Amino acid sequence: MKLYNSLTRSKEDFHIKDKTVRMYACGPTVYNYFHVGNARCFVVFDMLRRYLEYRGNKVIFVQNFTDVDDKMIKRAALDNASVSEVADRFIKEYFTDAGGLGIRPATYHPRATENIEEIIKIIEELINKGHAYVSTSDDGKKDVYFSAESFDEYGKLSNMPIAELEAGARIDVNEVKNNPMDFALWKAKKEGEISWSSPWGEGRPGWHIECSAMVYRYLGEEIDIHCGGADLMFPHHENEIAQSECATGHIMSRFWLHNGFINVDNKKMSKSGSNSFMVRDAAKQFGYLPIRYFLLASHYRTPINFSEEILEQAKSALTRLHNCADLILFNEARADKTVPLSDAENTSLAFIAEKKQSFIDAMDDDFNTADAIAALFEITRDINSMLAEETLSAKYLETASKTFFELLELFGFEKPSNTNDDEEKYIEDAIARRAQAKKNKDYALADSIRNELKERGITLEDTAQGTMWKKQ
Image (cartoon, rainbow, N blue to C red):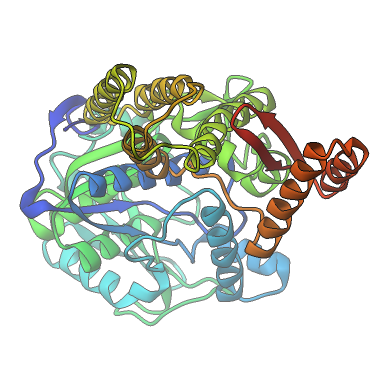
């Protein structure tokens, strides 16, 4: 497998040690619901994890929750709640939306506030090695800053020389630091803020050091993949690299993966830009699965444009996949176990095997989900054409459906069930009664049964192989 490494700005062979991948993704700051732009990172790297596991690897996947920062404190004040109460609320809401999008829980979901001890240890190590310093303000409060100049490779991820970064840096009026590029590892407590005890007094950690501590605690000093949105490359990931590599003396992550932005009217989607669409709201209109499809239908590194029209297209594409799934299940009853594979079926199975390999080739080439989905649709089209044949062997249906459902499940595109066993039995019984009514030429009864089902949101489709049903 080849992956594009943001650190080297090139595709590289991704070699897996001991069939185990140690992978970290930056999770949400839990002060609000997450928007579709945030969801791209969560969905894309959930898919990467799924694929690595599909290829026989164990993946230890960590996605954190940032549950203390300025936004959290501001939201807590607005809601007249504690920071932890805000975090609890929106972590719960995260799992609701993530579950709807088919995002599986990570191996670990640590919170920043659960790792204060680890954070303090790393800061102490950086101070002892001369990479961080304590800054005392006029009122005697102490902050701790990382010295960017102490790391010779600072700027290597964003590919910016430190002199250029310094030129664009600004110092807050409340900051007392040696260099504009230095960043906070520990912030002294302000009146009314949540805080923890430390060797430098009451305070709280900076954002960047939180992720370094959680990577170290749950995955070790060196990991295989660190991923996140392109907007995190600088300063967040750049600063993670600097502080982690100065503390440990070796590289933090072998690969850095970044997904592209989502644009609305050619502007990056963001909460601060007032052009964000919350996943919760979009799902009410289109459902969760079309959002997942939309986020995977393009190469993860390319910017994509969000619109209602595109989500409608995603919904239609999923309908084609789900119709094929329904047809496969419906045709199981008529598949003949006594007939051998026909020439046409053998040709179809060979085509399906070829397209499955195309799928794997696409995924192995920098995780190209767009081409992989195209291969899935070619498989779908071929299966649909075979299902229209009068005679169908059980061997063909079994082999073809195995590949189809395997890839459908891998993508997380399975059709969600919206009926229970009792309702399905009722529908099947109604279809049987309608078939008997038509056989008896009691078309009025047959029509009344159809209308009764329609009122329940069930539509019927009569085919050469029998009657299929769908629930709207």
